[in-house]
Image 1 (cartoon, rainbow, N blue to C red):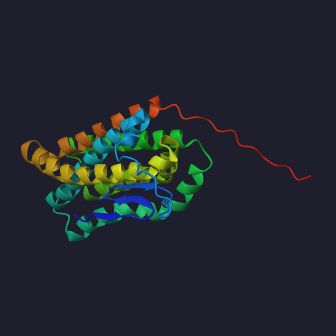
Image 2 (image 1 turned 90 degrees about the vertical axis):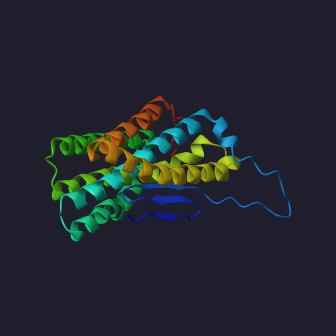
Length: 239
């Protein structure tokens, strides 16, 4: 299973069907005026950031479990190598199609609500995927369609996630917050596939999909409790 990890002025994450962008403005430290480097763990003092980081870690583990489960299931359905390859296409294509609309929408609407709606959408699709799989009614085409739907929700919330990080921590803590996000993702990338293998071997692939659906709940809970400050927009009239 292909997993690519990109870093560019922040952390961009592409899993086999998970893309999570956290765009952090690069902050340079003047070598001629050195200051004490903030602790890596200091952003964890911010309750909302800490809760979101933990919830994101759980969600990423569930996503990697679903990624392994989808690839394993497509092979089990004897759909052929083309369909197995199309799993990756269904995961990545929404980010090319929805990148600009999602970015524009993230700058217009309330980002918290956009993230919450996207998370609820993905949770709903994940529940459908788990239910259809457990019933044994999943076909290769339906698996591709549900994978595409999950990635579409992820693509819609991606720019909004990138924009809210500076609202959660101070400017000095942004580099440390980005590093903690990278650590969380790499841990999920290691734990998720291994845990999926155990779950699929002991129970079934449907259980792995159920775990993925459950992993969205904590993120939804944290987002609902997050009271994002409202900023009034001012307009300037020409004299």
